[in-house]
Length: 133
Image (cartoon, rainbow, N blue to C red; front, side, top):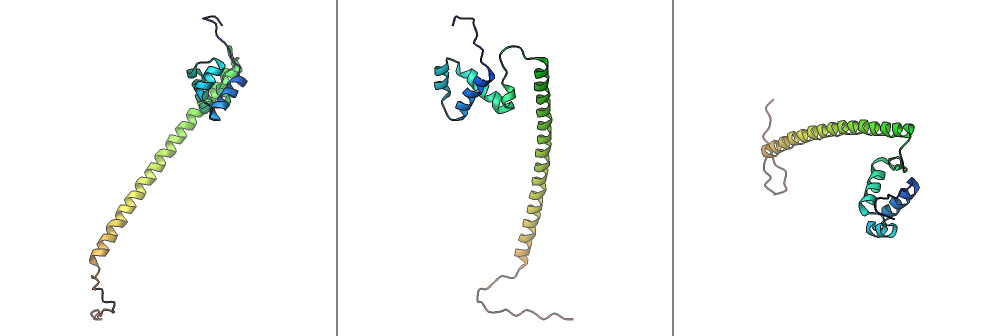
């Protein structure tokens, strides 16, 4: 291949290579086997991880319908990201509430422990003063 010419790989080939990467094969070995730069293989792998098979484009300019569906998928991911961030914030609030409850209960337990009579360790029942009613 002369310099300046670019090879074009179809989606099925990219998925084959990404599958082998995910299967545990070395990126360097695949790079030398296919004559493709390693950074391109990493880009394909990351695209599949981020957006699935749809994220890998076929060679050439995408058709309008395909480009629109990819754009819609990206918008959906952004919405999902916003929902995930809201859920994270709600969970963090819940953790804070639980931590406050633990701190309160721990303080109450410490006060109860201090107010209890010390145990002399004899094992016998102790007499208590009679209450006056």
